[in-house]
Image 1 (cartoon, helix red, strand yellow):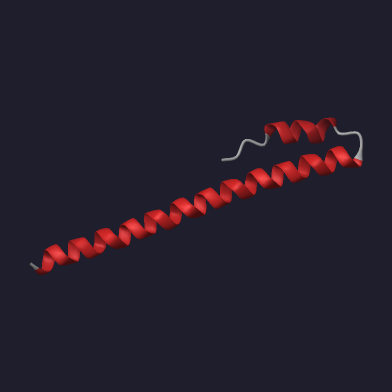
Image 2 (cartoon, rainbow, N blue to C red; image 1 turned 90 degrees about the horizontal axis):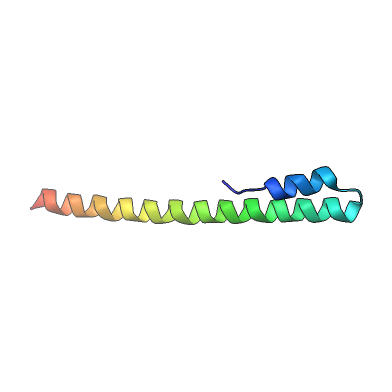
Length: 62
């Protein structure tokens, strides 16, 4: 999970709108990067599972 503790602390200490906006943007970017990474890993696992299934089916037919 993305570590957003720094951004949360920035939000707690923010006094101006620009500081709040900056903390929110940084937080959202971290969460987005984490989700992209998860989706890439998920896709690779699905591809590997499909390959393994094909290999097992090929072995079973022999």
